[in-house]
Length: 202
Length: 202
DNA sequence: ATAAGTAGTGAATCATTATTCATTCTTTGT
DNA sequence: ACAAAGAATGAATAATGATTCACTACTTAT
Image (cartoon, rainbow over all chains, first blue to last red; front, side, top):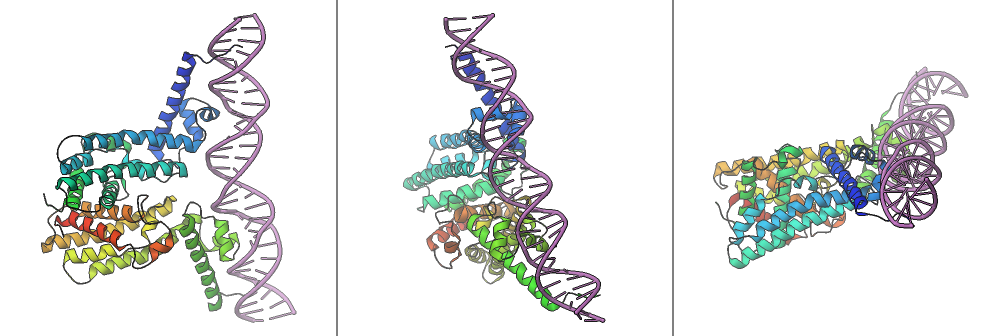
């Protein structure tokens, strides 16, 4: 027998896969999941359409992966913020400042499999917040309340403000990905959310 | 010349149109816009598929109309609540209790034309809230803040809580359409939102 | 009854895309 | 150099479903 997969090949395949992922991300960022065509992705990535299917079961699976990837980083950021020092209210406030770019993904209409990921994503956020709220309640810096429900409100308020159709920010990827801008917006969301939680004017 | 459209005919057409609208609504309520097939709608309405196109330009137009209809009633309810007596904070609180069923529509992935309606819908709500918040600020019962931004947070928090993927309520139409239930849920949303606005524990 | 015009029909068409797979190209070990 | 295996290709296929349109059925006015 002759061919045995070698490191060099593994690497080349990995590169192709990455190229596919990157181009998919780009397509999704431009026109959303709905309009991202397998053919176009293949074209951008410089592979044949068939090749996509050597790396992913189906279009949906590819999309689900994109979603997970784009999402993971942001959730991690929030988790990190919630894990660091300060009291519960302070940590929450820091966490609210965290996510910047991936929120845009939670607004987009998609296939069932991606929808599943989206649910997981929102839930991940909500869970982080819920835990933090509970801690705040235990510490006494947040009044007693239904932490689960409040965390849902938080996610909703933030999502709508940052990426919903009402959002004042342009929904282009570039600007929402930048680091520092739209501070007044973020600040007023934070104020609203913190007041909603604590019932304390600041 | 012979045939001239008569009242009887006008009426019959109107009935067919209404049947189409109703069945579309039913389909959408069951499986969402995505999966509502023109053929099935026609079948349910007892007309040929072609007939749909005598009443509506296109599938999208039909859907847009459904959306408008389902939506209008709810927005009216909120407007009414905001118009009645009491101070700003009280009126807002009443309005938050208003919408029940149509929120489910704002979560659903749809075609561009429907998307447009959805935007209008969210905006309608947000505008109502924004106006009410401004009034509350003028009256002094709500502290000064960015009314526009706060109204966006309200819409987001409510939408997520009632119909988002995190919603604890089943997303079936029947129960969310009922009048009185899920009070604890609604109450905690209201508490969160009112605190977010007023910064006052209740 | 007849003619003129409108409404209704639904099988056929058209358009769109994801997916397949027979074929060609590369890599690898001998 | 050769054979065995895998990888890549992309034209062809398949599936879906909206939309059309040639035709029939009905309504109306004379």
